[in-house]
Length: 382
Image (cartoon, rainbow, N blue to C red; front, side):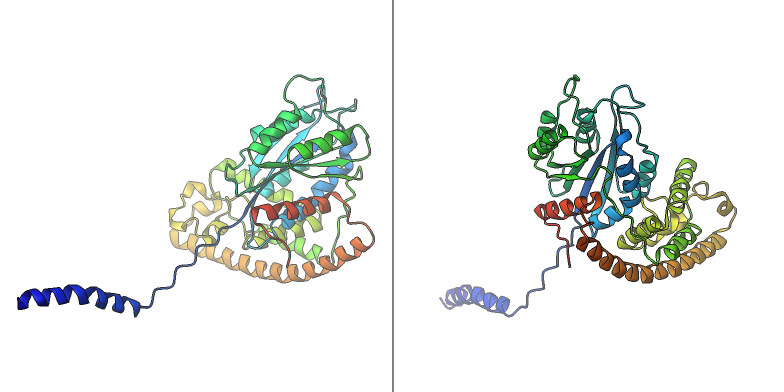
């Protein structure tokens, strides 16, 4: 009986003792979830007929500035851009499309090739251009991604052609969670109801701007020095990969070095915001090493530039480290100048707004992006 009594006491007191002991244990703090970067995908659908010359030239000057505004949220978003250029039947082309990519250097290069030409009759191949944007680009299927098309032009769509119609394309866009914003350039009265309806059907916004886009390229006293640093950074590049990849890399860099000083300065600002990368789109060895994306010893000799293939392992390592040091020094200087340039630009934007010159293509794009990003939890501002 004594044994039975002892067992019964243990059965009663043991759970209580365990409960009391557990209450004295300090729970380990829960690990903070990794901060997920917001993602933005934007396609510009541009009328490239003869009447759009002013806007296209302005867009070439402002594409990096617009991209900078898109990634100015906190945390810094991952951005992909795409392009669709359109004209009309009988022109050199009806549409040209370039898929969404994080390689903004490549998008800049493609935009430089756009020239305003063709057209004639007022309506253009708007439906075909929207079909390319909605159907042919590799949009993310993740509904947390902000996905936007900007339809930019001055003429209404040809509704007498067979093929896709904007009403159906807008429905497809909504199903894919893609907004379509319409930007009407100029004052063709026939265009307005079409542009307004497209925006409404695709849950976007409509704005009207001057035919030229009214963009003002703001040059700062620091741009020339930043453009010089852009060229010097190019001298530290080590393109790696297959020969066609290396050629494409240097073609993009040549385009950036040929850009006006203000454009080159905006490009450097973009790279700085992304953590100090020197070139978008990959294919540059020092960027890849700094990001931990590759190890020097795993890079094949045939993937290196010819002048580095003949170096021994130690010599190659020393050469790369020298380039890394030069790169770091240049980027430190870029960071310092960017701070001063940002402050100068902030004051200049206030001055232009006070003069009524803020109603431009780049300003309207920024305004719509900032407003629509809030639906995906992406916040801009201080």
